[in-house]
Amino acid sequence: MVTTVWVNPKTHYPVQIEKAWADQKRPPVVFASIQIDAELDDSLFSLEPPDGYALSVEEPGCPDYKRKLMTKVKLLSLWCVMYMNDNHGQFPGELEDVVKWGVTTREVLNKILAGPDDPDEPPAIRYHKPNVARRDPSTEIILYENYDQWPDDGVVVGFVDGHSELIVDQNRFD
Image (cartoon, rainbow, N blue to C red):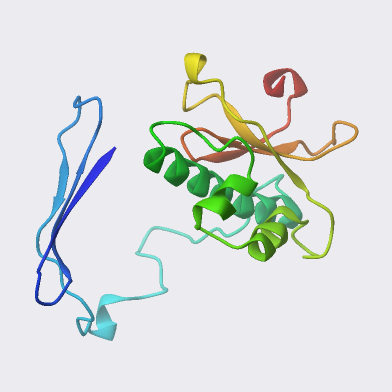
């Protein structure tokens, strides 16, 4: 995806943003009515679900630890995709490269890599640089939960396209 931003030279605020798909199969998305720090009426927001809908916070079969880990994997995936976009389609050789690139600090990266319940734990997430020649964004794993033996409740993974999943079937992971 290519993002083009038009900026007002006096205010330095964006006046238009266009997000165009690199493959040009889909039309671009254009944001033209951009307002910075606009006042919004509180009545626009509600925590009540619409009639006929229910709010479900729990995902069956997904422990709290895995959900927290999935959030960390999503953030790391985003950083890797941002890195790739700024580095001629190349993913980082190792996660330390996102620190060198300036998107985060080593301390923050260590906390994100650690287990969800203790920021001082050793890394709970591993990175695998994708094979550019066979890249399928929806199926190629770049991040995965560190494990010694396959856990009964599965492994949290992050994909080239930035989404994350809990994979329970080890054959699918392999």
